[in-house]
Image: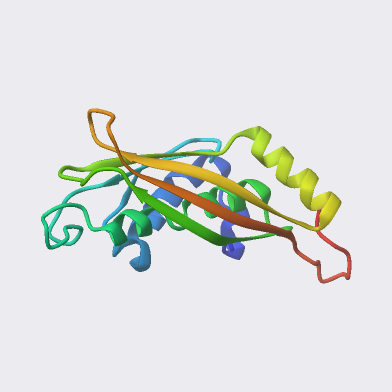
Length: 167
């Protein structure tokens, strides 16, 4: 999931390069979402989704597709960056619940914990794969929830070229 050059990038540069890279990646850029913050430990990301002509629906509120697509890769990427190249990480399922129309810019706060990473490593070490569930909310500046997104991420052990399995 991560490009082969990722491990050659100094750790101190990774958050900034990840933020800039994803913000300029055409598929993510088209969502209208922008990464505002990537933590130094690569476990926390803040996304801003402005209400613009590109993210607005016919009723003048935030388009549901923009809400979902701005969240689509984030949890899988956080896990991939923290687990490393010995793991395969894919989005498996998602659901979205709209709570109220978005009439202003919205923010989503993505977090994975060290406990999440340890639990994934243990489950994959034991079973060869696991599914992990995450939840994120889009909130406005006042903290009101406009949408809840639930994601299921698949994580599996990558077989190494030497015939062994990843750990």
